[in-house]
Amino acid sequence: MLGILVTAVLCRFCVDTATSVWLVAPLGASAVLVFAVPASPLAQPWSVIGGNTLSALAGVICVRYIPDAAFAGAIAVAAAIAIMFALRCLHPPGGAAALLAVLTHASSFGFVLFPVLVNSVLLVTVGIVYNTLTGRRYPHSQVVDRSNAPTTSRFSPADLDAALQRYNQVLDVSRDELENILHMAEMNAMERRLSDLRCKDIMSRDVITVEYGTDLQDAWLLMRRHRIKALPVIDRQRRIVGIVSLADFMRHADVDLDVSVRERLHHLIRRSSTVHTSKPEAVGQIMCTRVRVASANRSVAELMPIFSEDGHHHIPVIDSDSRLVGIVTQSDFVRALYGSGGAKT
Image (cartoon, rainbow, N blue to C red; front, side, top):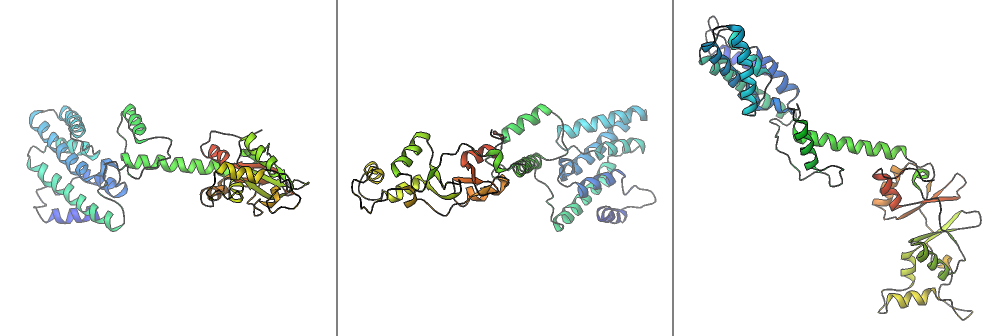
């Protein structure tokens, strides 16, 4: 309303309204693009001004040199499309501007300047002011900004460029907006996939465990043999009482001392030959008793902050009776995150 009103009022006072055209109908279609879809490549200032003006010029030339209106109209619209493609100012109402020039027998080049050019400039000016005041970006830059592109996306900007090149058609959406839409769709799909997954779907079921009184040397050998970094500590009912990790061994071995790590670890896990000793002998003496666990039916999505922010690497999984049934490691979580692993059996 504002765009057409301002354009019409200003142009009407410029000419004798009884004898001259002061507003062209294609401007109504231009207003739809400028105010309804300002991000569209077809609605940008150069598209509106260049598309309407150059198309009207094509129409005037056809009127001057082609007597038959039917042939003139067809050639004018075809020429307008070709010019807009060549000069990268494709604007659908431009075809109407070319046809209008033919149907109204506009043979003067003055028609191109006024009302077509002036109408288009005024409409774009109002569009810039309105869209800016309402918080929408216009003109909408069609230059691709790849500095903020997600680094974990499954496709790269080059992949998108290659797909668009094979598509080989004009899209009524800018290149950067299309890329943003695809990234948002990818994130939504990932969130939906994770929300549907439960811990029981991705956990490792064959959990290597130890008990409170398990000898440190035995626990260390288990970790080395199975190439794991943590062992849940359970009681006889398979309830979690703690967890022992590589970090616990390192901490109690005093690896910060000026002695080799190998020697310190060997001293820690070696069985003592004396009855009374202050050196830890069993897993229960070095394990961490505060264990973060998850229920088997817990959503995998809820584990994201635990792994990413809390620094956990292993989350034991328990059933409704608080018994250990599995463990979710960072590898299990990453596999689920990228959709490359399904439910384990």
